[in-house]
Amino acid sequence: QVQVVESGGGLVQPGGSLRLSCTASGTAYTVYLMGWYRQAPGKQRELVASITSDGNINMNDSVKGRFTISRDGAKNTAYLRMDNLQPTDTAVYYCNTGDHLRWWDNWGQGAQVTVSL
Image 1 (cartoon, helix red, strand yellow):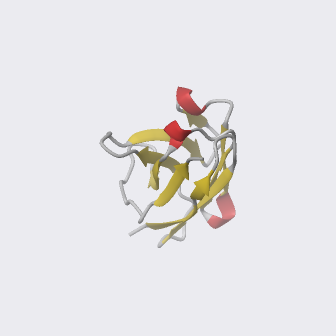
Image 2 (tube, helix red, strand yellow):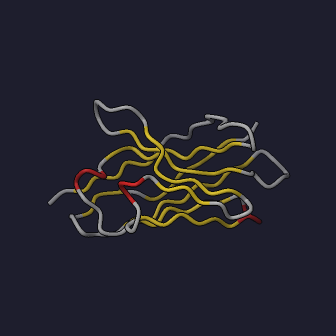
């Protein structure tokens, strides 16, 4: 069973930057779909960005132009570079993986991102 481990996150001031990393393990194959969700207090979990092994990227409109998703296919690792962070970006960020048909929802422990003065 594929498992994911997130790293990165932390506390940053508005306008600052952070990078999250996610590594998927437990498979000898390239994971097709990797992405990031986030959940703010009192809100539903939402998709932030996703990337496939053949390079297709999907970004939430709220982060377009500020966040960048990339991956190292050989390592089944995905990265989320977050620039110009705003207080509304404060949330726990979760990595997720999937195949051509669906997300697997094999959530990791999450990475807390807090944007505050």
